[in-house]
Length: 80
Image (cartoon, rainbow, N blue to C red):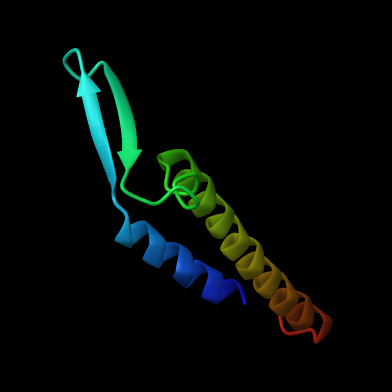
């Protein structure tokens, strides 16, 4: 389920790119998207950054859990 949602999110991001509009020599920039109104709230740089952080955190937690479980089995068996 989660992988499917990630694929759908990636397809939406690729389908509707974000354009950077800078004024006054790149000191003040705004971002706009060509996405339709229901999707334009998801196609923002801040949403992308938060999504990537959540995904990276989840992967790190799963990897740490797998490592810790392997280590605990190894120590319990006396195979340090």
